[in-house]
Length: 255
Ligand code: PGA
Figure 1 (cartoon, rainbow, N blue to C red):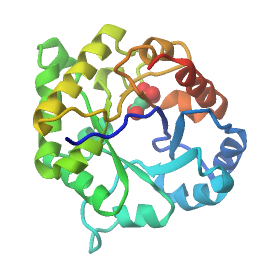
Figure 2: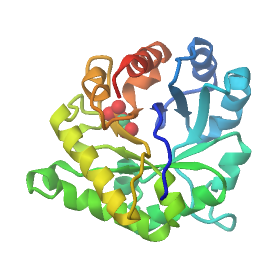
Figure 3: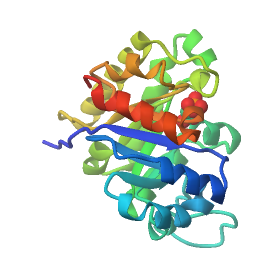
């Protein structure tokens, strides 16, 4: 039986925001939050500096990149490999964020190759899945998420698939201030767990995060659901104090 323990994770996806000055001020305001792993995803160009700044806080703050290339090395101008992310001090990498799916036209198969590359380099991939508003309205939300998960399941050895962190991020909830309802999240997280268990043929306790307009106000509703292990936060995580406050809400939540 393949099992991996789920854990509480609060991740800050900075997207294309930040500066050296902002990073310094941000790290200085971070505080350890018991039993919650804080993971920062600054733009990849700031990763090395972030690793230096985090220094002694490394046991409770981890770093990651927002994307990776699927190949180890080669003539791919502008790209960063998973091994380079690890070399810069990253331990995590987001793959398949909806902004990459949309603006960089990344397919399910390519995203799966990126997850493979991440494990090969010793990184923990966080694979984002989620439906658009049109897909939800058409009653296709679960079909889309299933397709996105299946591509990754097909590409990864089952031991890695069991360790994968999945972030459910409905596209219509990202950066819109309109988060999903607790019922929608509960339903999709249960679906994700069940889809993974049936692909693995075994019980898995792996981590499933929610993302999409998470704030101090919306977070408790998600964190008190048994199926939510944490969140991937964009806008609200650009402010270190808000990020720590949301992490405190995760610490005290039932999940
Ligand atoms: P948001 O972004 O919190 O600003 O909606 C979340 C994400 O894109 O990961």
